Amino acid sequence: MAEETKKKAPAKKEARPAAEKDAAKEAPAEKAAPKTDAATTAGAPAETPVVAAPTAAELLGEDAAAKKIVKAKHAKNVAAGIANILATFNNTLVSITDMHGNIIGWSSAGRVGFKGSRKSTAYAAQQVAQDAARQAMAHGMKEVEIRVKGPGSGRESAIRALQAIGLEISAIKDVTPVPHNGCRPRKKRRV
Image (cartoon, rainbow, N blue to C red; front, side, top):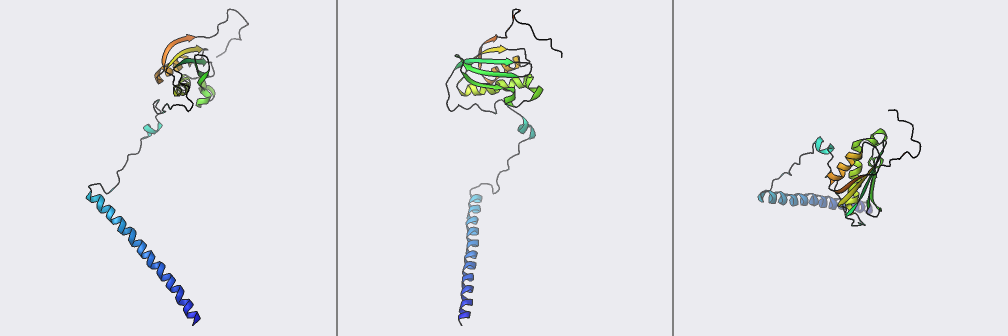
């Protein structure tokens, strides 16, 4: 008899969860039904709206306005400064300082992501100037005086990029060092 009671007890335990499972299955169905009825009575569409996928041109196209200028955490609030552009044959560096010479933001072609001979291109200089200008504008820079040094191909494109991003240019100076027959010059470049 003891064995029979043991067998019956587990059967009762199994019956209870099955009944609870059935009740649980019915409850969500009842909950879901009023939602759809309410949605259709309110005039809302039963299906979710389909959002068009972005095109390849939208995904690949880089925009100057795409990277927003966000205020820096410890912003220095410098309104005017100096943009020093060093354009060599192999690289372009742009450093933006305040009027005393303290660095606000800087960038180089290697820092932007160019390698090898692409660092000396005009496009790389444009990207460098935009990156440095974003950093400076995050500190409140609005007006800039430009000082250009070196014979590289990125001189003009860096100046145009600074102007295009929204910095007001007050002056442009060429500060390339020119010897007055000082020391012996380098050997002539063979291109």
